[in-house]
Image 1: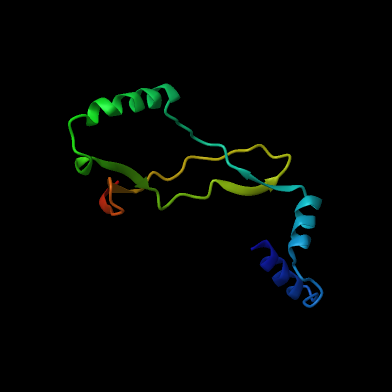
Image 2: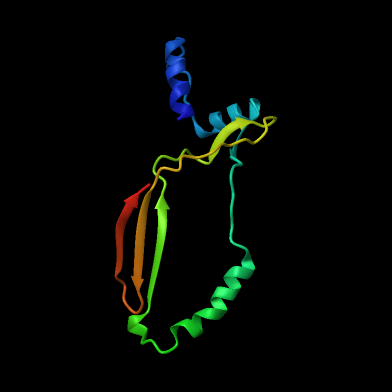
Length: 127
């Protein structure tokens, strides 16, 4: 995108045929102006590893007595379709700052039936 914009600016300034906008030009431009591509810092939340380990230990007890064909994996996830990218170009000296992302989402239910390759997805609702 920067390469395309640079070509447009060059044309407007009367340097149309001289600027190629190659990958090398882009890298030199970014290095010369100290522009880097970083992940924005923002909200974060994670599940403690101990909780995951405990759940993995409990699975055999939970599925005991069920036939394999009757064991399903179902998961619900949010599809955040109004979120901004979590990476951006910035100057090296700038502090990494993100912001709160949009919470508008569709909730999607995904199911995988064991021993088959079929998967089923459906939208449960929007929040």
